[in-house]
Length: 338
Length: 279
Image 1 (spheres, each protein chain N blue to C red):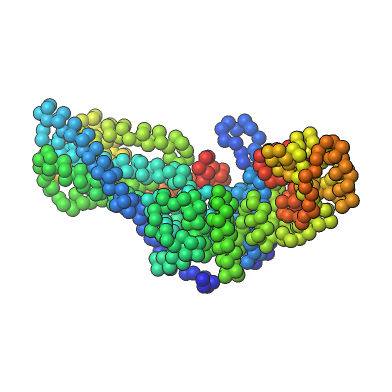
Image 2: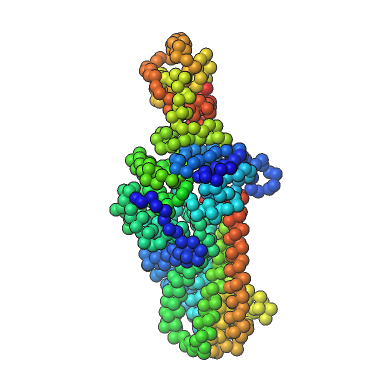
């Protein structure tokens, strides 16, 4: 394996063995043959539904978990055998994190964690002020962390991750549970940090397609522990462009209707968002001339077309094309719509 | 924001920084929650009064009141060892801090030492208050025969008790949710076995000697011999022997803590459950 990569995994697998009586249940595969490489300076996204294996991979790369098989390296160091060297070069922030102590102020919490990485008091305090201002939390520096809202607390956690100036930073669903404004601030901060620190690397996991599309240089789509594809968001979407995509607003459809629609000739994928009295359907067709027969078939089945628009592919379309379902359908365990 | 690399301490400097940083929340926490301190002084003091009045009703020798006051002061440390040391890694797991500790380039032993030193400092204030108030309320006559021995046995007592707490922190973490029950199991019985409010030599010799495996027993016995001369003849061992035993216990518990924290980290990485708050 090349030693100049920021992150590299080679056929990494992870099994979870159920606790309790031996042999009572089969081990569960959380990761299966994951091979990835991330160059220094890259903002790499792992995109997948909850339970896809994203957090397991991050735990392995941050030395919190050993792989059951394969090799993983960060900064050229083996996460299993050279954990201490890896730890000197990384940091991690997770969405919904409740770390720190509620009795301490924002500054004190951040100072405490900075000490665990060997930052001097002067440097730590300067950086705390600087970074809190960037994330618009400067006015809360002396507020007890127990008095912060979820969004402000997550901003504090984000600062904790960047404070130690890691070579590789792992962001595990960093905007989970944040309101739109706070999530936008966090994304803006990540973007600026990458611009100002060209040699640093970020591995970001998310199940927000827009976030991955907005931030990442490259994206790997992961589902059920396997990496299904890996490329730049632009190239992933480009692959979809030879399959025309349409957004249809229809009178309400039920599950049999969706299954029937997915089975029509020339329909590659169907994703849907049910509303109160109507359903938005995203159709991926094999070619544009299939659209006419599809609309005719809908009409014949008594389903009214309320709106039709052709649109550009998104990462969500790529996900549906590869996995066969929308990401929220996978998370919700919904039936396949194509 | 400059993009140049930051200097980060390693080795003993990082170890020392970690100790100070982890002790800080404990010390500052006491400053911020003064009501807690008030309750932590007055409630145990009320418990002590009950024992004092029982002894007085039974017309027990005067030094027994001294036993109770010394026991009350030292029990503050014991409770801190159980609830804020032995149970603490489990608490950190629940708070979500444990993965950050494991993932940091610092030593988990430094984190545990920071907890211990922070705990000692904050509890010393409570213990001193209990001692001073108890002495004043019941007119206890302490007569220190050897100040150096008193200081030595007190320091070694704290070192061995908190080293035991550091060792138990990893053990209790391995038991997951049962940790809370383990703490309870180690609280009340130790009051009995250590002779918290009575001379341990009340027990048969073999039981008294076995009880000295608990540092609190040796600490109380040694402190009584040095501070309450009337009880000097009733010690389990001479003070200097007890100091040696406390030193040995400190070394054994510290080494055990070091090995167990390594084992705990190995389990965490192998099974992936110890850093999971739901695991």
